[in-house]
Length: 448
Image (cartoon, rainbow, N blue to C red; front, top):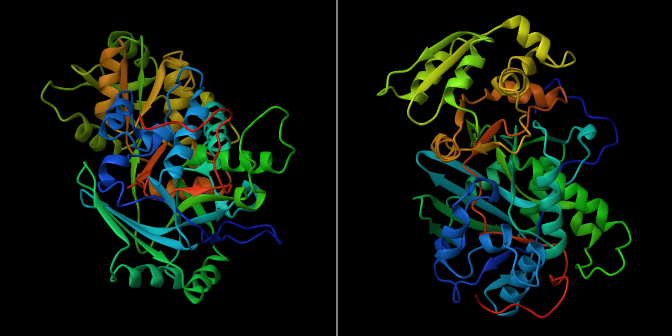
């Protein structure tokens, strides 16, 4: 992504290979808006039930399955996937291809290629992570893919392109789309399929020498790699999970976006901390921040946070009724709290200061504590805090150049630091890792 990155010699190149997508059959499911949903980690506490109610075949039943009598969550997802494929609700494209995907919403647009991306060790410097991950969601996504034999939602990658692959994408946008849908959030989604061998080869050649940054989907990418490693080992005795094709498992479903032609938006991920009163949060914060400013009740919290953030690290803390802005963290205390081996860029990130200083040192709660939850929308963090007797912690977005700098150095930002978008809608394009997904036991599930 940057000139400062050096890849070891002899590493495999970045590849985005064609695949036979699993898609909803239009004659069976005429309303794609009712069966698709946002990515699993942005749906929120109440979202699962809402998407389940939208349609009996909404993809949320696959990506966030519920336990049923006699089935664990993963088995139930596998049963539903197998049933939907067997009854023609979902169909696999006859011919492999790459897919051009355009997602436009509220003045922001993501345009890129969807395919099966090659998986790489971070040391290869081909696919660059920029955030740490939690072990629990990585294990969860790994088990879901193992049970279903499928990759159900693409991760989001971005790269420094402006080459022949992007020429193909932009030319494709002027042609008739394979499908299009406007979802309930007002977003427009259009998809085209590329199957011409010469076009695929042009894209392959252009991408071979490039690097990609993981914009969204660090946990799923880590799960891809974990499942790939599992696919190369002998299956455990007594399991009825599908036997994965190691070749298919060596790649992961991904959308690749050219950062020059179609730059993604970059937002922040907020926190809520249950069981911490605003008064206690402010009292503790005053021991580490020189500026703790009470906001008027009619103040725009987001605007106030952005304005103060232009002068340095700043955070908004509130319970939905009252708000303060924390700024000017004590440099001596911050320096003592942050890992000494990190770069200056990493050490000045708001996410680093929040996760290594504000939360553990001042509020005595780890960023991995169950009382801390993560929210892409400030309103969601505020709602969660108000319902659990806690506070919302709002952050400004990181800067693009800082994200790239951290990734180029091989460092990882704290977990849940960035929110790139717009993100791919789940359910439009899915990928099988085996010829037929099977459950761990029992017959196919019927329509619910």
